Length: 241
Image (tube, rainbow, N blue to C red):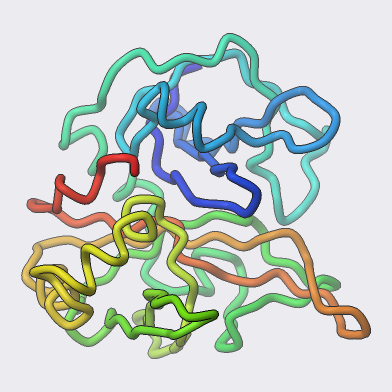
């Protein structure tokens, strides 16, 4: 199976989470290693293979669970994993457009304005594409200061007016280059204006495994896996650090 990579997100511990869509079937695949312990690619492995949004990855994939466990129905074990090419801009656009929804409810099967879904009432999937039709009103960025570092976060709203604020942005390209964005020629507001000037903008939204601090109820927390714009994007932010 060939998938077009739609998500390359940073994780703790020097790993990245890769996901992609089979353009023939529309199935979303989150490749994982058949190992005990951490199943995800390391950052070093992804960098060595230059796994990027739009990369065409070929492999043998099989579900990690049968039937799949909701909400992480995208989990697949892989073998013979390799990057075999780069999708055209049109093909990349098509997999995003064909998977897109305009509301959180239609994307995940239920709505939320709390940045999370309860563990005991999970959504139907863990990755979805949200299409923004009025980008200027639906997407903005803010700077969060954590542990002496500047962290870029996103405020989004869907077509029904559901607002999700202070979402972590785990898009590898944007997170890797946060300093360049905030201290260079972009800035949080200029980044918003750049996306607002595009014809189409798609957000890949993901939820993590249920988690909570000790003594609290576990939740599936939302994050922004990727932000993609057409016809233009910022290629200088794509390089691995």
